[in-house]
Length: 296
Image: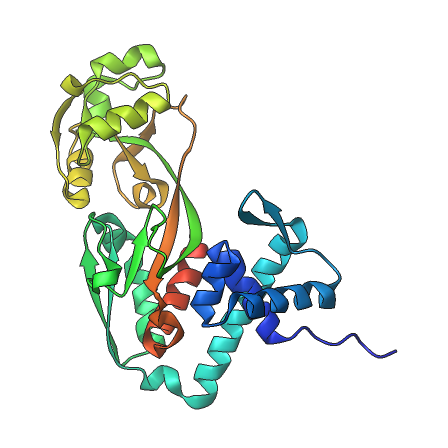
């Protein structure tokens, strides 16, 4: 019996763009197609596979269960296609120039170095300029080529991909907890200090959403520089939330406030639409997407 024909790669690419962009119009712009053409390609893929990949909820397109399953497989195909193209033409080694990546200082120092080591082995002639800042860089003004953000940008000319959902908890140094005690219930909080990571009012409001009652008087020290603030926590000045992966790498730190649920925050990988025409940006974008999606 003859095997069924394989889906057209252009149709899969249209599906991936629609899933990542969230609308046919945005996906069409990202691929340089007209919306009717892209819509026909997605419909053709549904016909080829015999499943419905999207359902419309209001004005938004939402993946069906079949679409979600295909999304992961399609992304793997996209990575494989990019890798095959680079390998076949020797482009990875030939890629050169500078790519500017912006991320928070914490991610830049604690999470990205192993990722960049691997990138350097893949593209040894590529230069990476890390812009470590907690401000949102403006990609449209080319202050950076690729950004790792914890909020999805709303500019229509940017490509944003949700690549990871991180876990965080509240932590404090063992030295601090030995002095001040280990809080086991909400009633213990008034006797503890917190270290500020920037805007204390925002942190207090966020804590209230977690049913944590803390006050401005509990913030005696802090810094908008994440590395400095985390060092203040490690040095025993108080309690603060932190990405679990970073906290687990830090000696002398304990998880506290056990009654608080796990905190979750997204990792959005963002770039401008040059990702479709620049080999070096595409290489770095795909590499970061794969590495961050595999974060434990």
